[in-house]
Length: 110
Length: 117
Image 1: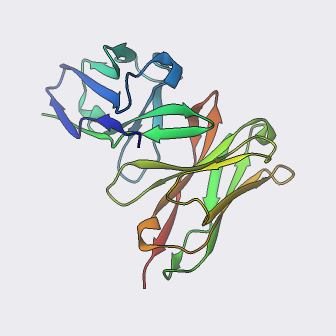
Image 2 (image 1 turned 45 degrees about the vertical axis):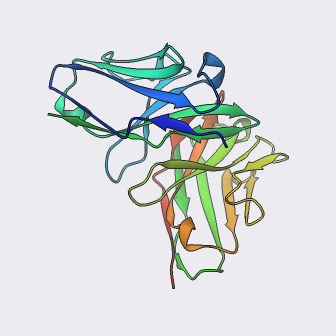
């Protein structure tokens, strides 16, 4: 069974840089999986940050960027701010209309 | 305004049924694939089901196959999820999500389904 993995938690200092990753149990993540990233605060639906590997959604600050690092998709936050403390989810498209989400990463700004 | 509004969530006993609805507005609903995604309390997001733009093709997660049915009425701009034989583990917020080129791009606010005796 295919599993998408994310770091369960991460911490970064205010103003620092952090890279969250998204991996695939069955192999490498590539652009063919259209990796995308979402930010979620408590009680709210997810908000799309980056889609199709590295395209920022409208209105998303440019401190958020997406890429492929090695065999994983990555979301980098450069110059983290206090309001970035929340949950981050990645999703991969597996084909046939199927999405698979990672377990989410809880980011702390310490 | 472009939006998705879910409804129909409720408290139901194990083995019961529920139908969720998602009303779409502000965009051409009949041009998009649509999905249901759920999130159990304190947990991550889990894909449930997808339907194509004209309602002819649907796909399901193994965990709901045979119990849930996704459908749509393009004349009413509405997406549905019929949930039968509900289990405690189906307890979650259910989100209606628009698919844009294989990627989730718009989410509703969600509707809570609680399965408990």
